[in-house]
Length: 432
Picture 1 (cartoon, rainbow, N blue to C red):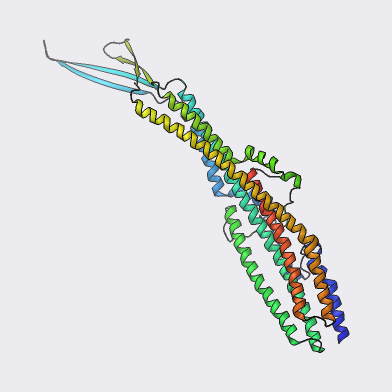
Picture 2 (cartoon, helix red, strand yellow; picture 1 turned 180 degrees about the horizontal axis):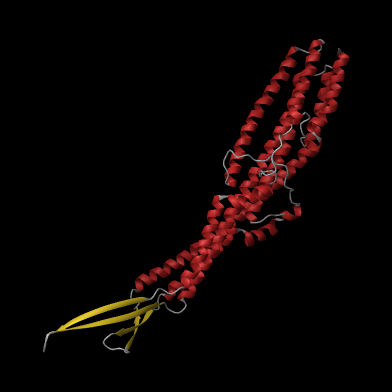
């Protein structure tokens, strides 16, 4: 019986790398029953690109921002247009009593056109155009925020999928370890507690699978919300992981320059600053009067026309000076808001870069040091358990260390993807 137990332990030791995979990467389940169910190719979710394309066409929040930007572009023509002319029609009836009662009628026509002071229409048109640029930048900011949330959710789904695969592999391993413990117990080489501990560990794995399934459903519901789909709609399992950029692409100074040039929030604030400058010029031109021109004719004098010019007199200087001070204050506020946004975005970029570097270093440390050490510790504990030098609890602790190391590795990979999504959000464009 002892030789049979040693043989099973040797088989377990030989199959351990196959159960966990090389370099900390979980492998596909060995049994067909644990294989992922096939999903129709039409469903989004297999790749990040498919999700982004779907959201670009179907997300209602982004669609509303696009419509608002289109609406703002139509205000440019309206802002530079003249006001509609005014047509006045008058009818006069006069009764002359002397020398005999007689009724005299007269029809009068008057056409007036209001004309602002020189340059005001151009300034209004420029302000509307800058507001259109700001609306377009807000739409772009909405998309970068939406894309970042999709990328983060996709990374979380990848982590859940890999973690589930790892837990199922550990469950299979614990089943085999239970059989070995049972064989040793039958041969009088181990206590019954070893078998019970293996069964308890299996129950923990099954409970963890339930929690993983709940988390998967929550993430799928969140992803469907971002895509503009029903929360219960089906999604394909992630199949393609994003390749992390090379360290040369993450130079802090170069990325900061790209942020200042491409970040939609900074661009929107810059457009608001220029619009505030144009508005200040417009308010200063209100010191000059607007005027109106017109023409009038009456039925009594056919062929006789009267020309008119009206000018408003800018006498309310106190209100105009208040308006000028208001425009100056609004310009200063727009500049301060632009500087604050730039500082905040650059600070967020530095934080995301630090987090990305930490996640990548942590993944490398786990793959090159912690994981091999944990596997060697498990191999040693397994051999010692075979010879009766350690108990089953020590073997379980060594197995948990291997599992924790592999979970740490895939968690670091997911964190790197999350930080990459944040960096691309601040930069305003893809890094690859």
